[in-house]
Amino acid sequence: MRATAGDLNILFPKSKKNQIVKAFDEWRPRVRSHFDPRWRSHRGANIPEADLEAIIREITLQWMGYCVMHRIPVQMGKAEWDQPLTRRIIRAAVERTFPRGSEDATALCAQIMGLSRDAYLKWAEREDSFLGIK
Image 1: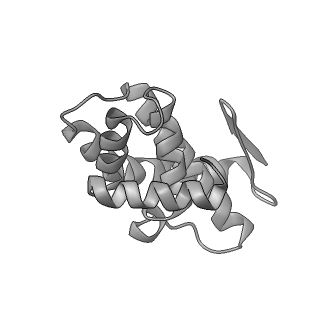
Image 2: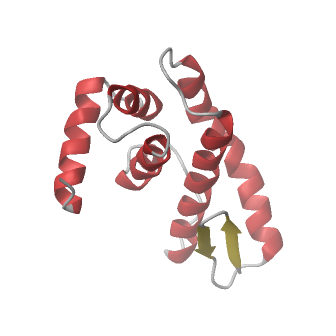
Image 3: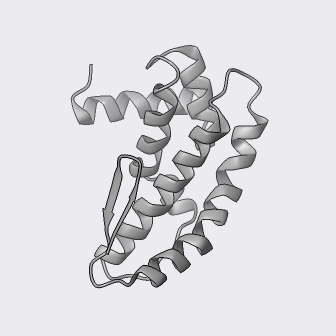
C-alpha cells in the first residue's frame, strides 16, 4: 500500500488501505492538537492554515510510515515531535513562505516547534552543519 499526498509518497508494506486510513484518521487529530495551538498563538507573520494542514498531514504520514517500516505500533508524542524529522518538516514548510534565516521564519519555526528563539537557532545551525548547508 502506498499513500500519496501532494509530493509526499509513503510506502506501507503489507498494509491494507483500510488500516492506513483508520490509523491516519486516529493520529491526524492528535498531531493537530499538538501543533495547532502553537500555530494559532503565534503573534507574528504566519503561514496559511492550509500549509499547517500540510505539515500535520506530512508529520502524521511520515511517523506512521516509520512505525510500519520498523514493525512497531504507531505512536506519536513528545519524543517524535522533538525529532529532527518532525523539525525538518516544519522548517521546510515555513521556509516555503518566509526566507531561510529570516526573523519571520525563525520566530514561527521556534513557536511551532515549542522552542525558544535561541534554542531554535542553535538547532538550525547544527542541522545545517549536519546536512552540509551553508
